Image 1 (tube, rainbow, N blue to C red):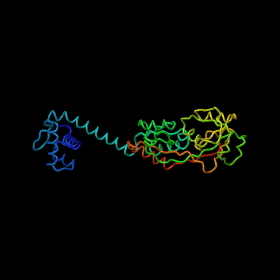
Image 2 (spheres, helix red, strand yellow):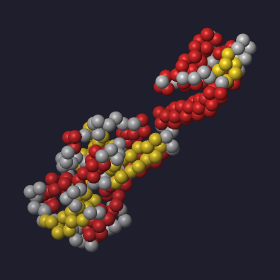
Image 3 (cartoon, helix red, strand yellow):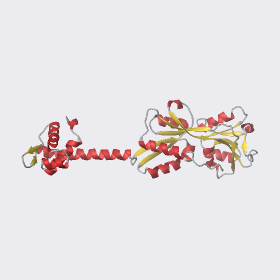
Image 4 (cartoon, rainbow, N blue to C red):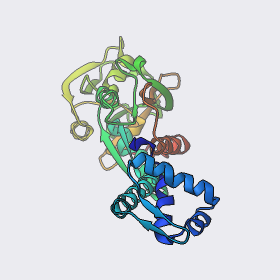
Length: 303
């Protein structure tokens, strides 16, 4: 019964309550008097009670009609608030967008994108999770984030992917290392070098292992989680590391050198990943457009 009560019926009743006259209330509602009368009758049928007493001159509310005024006002106000709130989401004045990104992306390039997004859509909350590749995909699969910026990894075929950029690798060594003076390095020249490794769970480590397979590098025995640790170990002469371009900013203030690999070595591909069964919200679509527009970021290769 109550499902038949529309905002149009409620507004007609409130207009009648204010005007106390069918003709004037109909004119305010931009309806003919007969059409307006039908709306009031339809409302009374839906409510199951007589709401107005009609005479030739004025309209008087019944006791039930007097009680229903507050109900109608509350329902109309709630309806208008709900649509105004929804309109804010449509216009990207409100909302939420969540991202998962590799630490190198979360620290280099993505902050500028998020800052630009907040300037454009200040009412939208942006959440950022910096995580390794598998964790990024787990957050996406759980619905915690809308988009993941990550490297290829396990179970990637379950998601929708698009290229973000390529991330070439560099040798990072001390400034006094025998290879430090070279403009570029062939992978074969790393034979005998002691490599400092990141965790096997990281996409950096996985790609470095692919690059060095079969060339006779030595494992330094040092395998760590954080790039700051890698930098400190290299600075003390404990080994060298193969690292992607997007991480090089972390090594700028130490006596280290970053040397590009010779052309032809495969870079680490970075991807934008989303869930195939979850359409992006308008807030997330705006973030995706901004990422695609401003990527890749300007990167300083000096360390």
